Length: 386
Image 1: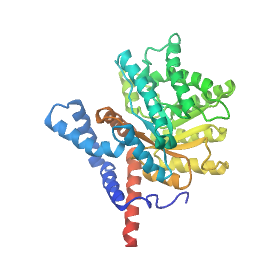
Image 2 (image 1 turned 60 degrees about the vertical axis):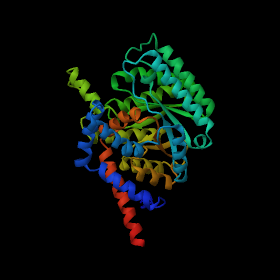
Image 3 (image 1 turned 90 degrees about the vertical axis):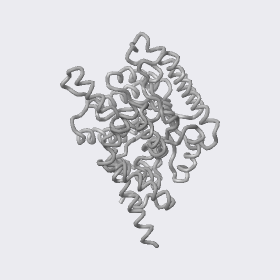
Image 4 (image 1 turned 90 degrees about the horizontal axis):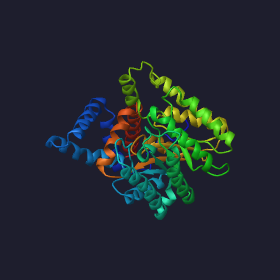
């Protein structure tokens, strides 16, 4: 057995009961699927009384469970709670890509990210507990219009953010984009990694690789080789992917019979585990971002086989706050570097992000059921002791 059989043993009984009830509901397809559809419709038509009531209910339940709250102070409070468990933070005020937004709105998003870095640095708990801050290039730059001629401006803006993070000892995670925008984002990532990721120091910038894409492993390998040739450190966050429905819909609209994504989940799982094995074998900086316990166990076994210690500063694991806590706590109890992505902001800003994460991630329902089973097992153990 790789991990403790009771990851929730340090949690209060009240919290275990609350979390078990909530996770039992969201992991039940007969409840979760209709609820997601109803919430999507409510978000599209907020004026009706029923829609407003449903959204208010979501704010009182889903929002409180999956986010820190509305302010940075709420993140600081959650950081203190997670610190007790040995879990660190990826902190963000989530911003989706801004299609149709003005230049002023995009610049405001960039300023907001600078403000977040400064707030983390000025709060003792956050400075101690936060390692990573995600950045969404398409919230600052119109990637659909970026070309080799004007990519310099986008690079300059992101370079200033990298420089600020470097000075503060923070690391930035460049979020993945939809496949038709990814090439521009990759160009920026490679340019910035060559400038800021200095061998022998912790990398300033990680690029994200979606392993449900058929080209995912090849991109990962070629980018690593490019950084090695340039004498810089490569750093990658590995995810299964967050745009599966959008990618397939775009392919249909373009009458393209060849999807950029794998056809089956098994192929995606194999691609993901191959990517993790590749990164561990190269000794590269890697964030293994997954809710899939089998992939986590595969990665841990590969680390042990290669003599990589659990707290090796090059290797990190990550899950979203409120999801797969059983995985997070198992890793933390065994001294692995593990992080929770913790979001803050208004309900209106975060709600689309939450819906997309649950809708797009094929592992969520399965992971939620595992999460529920671990919580129920803990409850049985507590009441047996009585």
